[in-house]
Length: 105
Image (cartoon, one colour):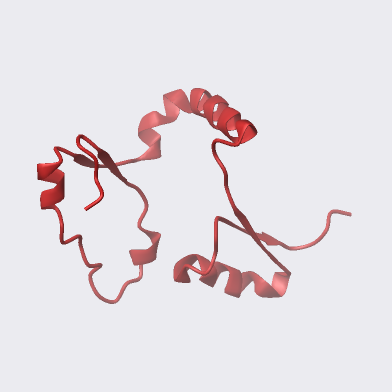
């Protein structure tokens, strides 16, 4: 209900549904794509590899200017490997999930 005219919806990933026991429910408002003349398409990063350096430069600039912000979720300890991995599948993590095994020596 919140799409602008001629908007684009990018579909990427799907990790939350990899082990789903039931089909993932679909959107109930697909006619909004029609009435707003919008597009929905899948995104595969491999299609854009020739432009990787351009993307890295743009992204770095946006991060440095504050226009693009990110979150890192760091868990600690070798014993937390299973629970940290589980966080990826349960949605408990916020941002990039990392596990710190030990301090560099």
